[in-house]
Length: 412
Image (tube, rainbow, N blue to C red; front, side, top):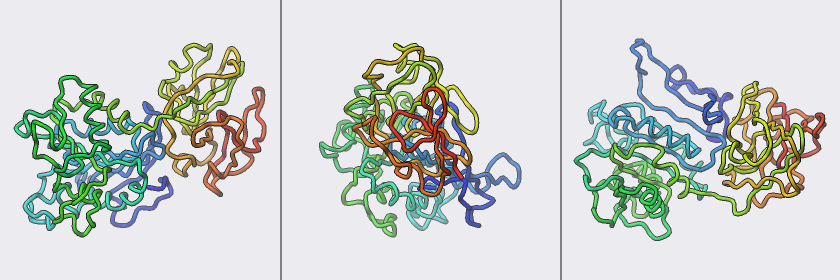
């Protein structure tokens, strides 16, 4: 699942029956996610039996961000807030605890035994924590990765502060830390908010130093996270305490996006010809399709997904699109500004059995004339040749990939 597989996974007996793993399409975001979702409700009371939680992977993220929500039910609306942040920043994964943190008493918590066993931030024997233990080596090797854990603070806690940010430590951030960048962005984009970090005034004691996921990301050994505080921080874990009144996803998106920006210095130049064009882009555009093509006489953008055509409002890398143009663009083409695609190769999870309409990606800078081998983009032995492209009038067999074009690929 972490490597991009989904439908081909067989759940172990400990999860089979309790969980379903499935690809599902978010039509609003135009993304296929892979979700591990609890489904067993043996007494049909409308509630899942175990309360172990939910894990969702985006196989083609714009940012290597993990969004953690630890206190569903206890913090009103925090689940919906977390999902919206995950969707809108196009993060890598979303992890949701499955129970109220006080659903159980502390009798079964051998980690931090004064706290309930259902409190996933303080118990390492939970599905939530075990998922992070498995996922951490896979994601943390990427220097652009960060795990963001949102917690809704009580009104009586740090009442002079709207948002308190830490790296899971009471230590002040250094000047290069994204903690400072995020604070600055939130203050700039939300005038009137009081956003602080350790060392700021007013002070706040909700530093997450006993948060065992924070300790794990801050390189405390997994068998010591219950008792040992981190002595250093990795800069890849963000413990966020926020007031319920600051829990609107739209107020956070631009700040998170700017803090973890992979903006490409020079735009990609997309060329269109009169008539139907089968196109792609090798980055995440800053603008939606209607804004991007506003100055050009073009029709609707069409994407083939899940065996059917749908109108699309966004362009994203690795996908092919049909677009009708009334005229040729000039020699330079259309300037597409945006963010770098985190990965070049298309994973198994991004391809469906049968026909797929895809687009190639390379790292910046972009060369429309570069020849790209099929196996540099596609998983080896996952597709059947020939691969087809559009020459402006008819389909022809492609010898290789080129940027800016769309291709029909058949997955075995």
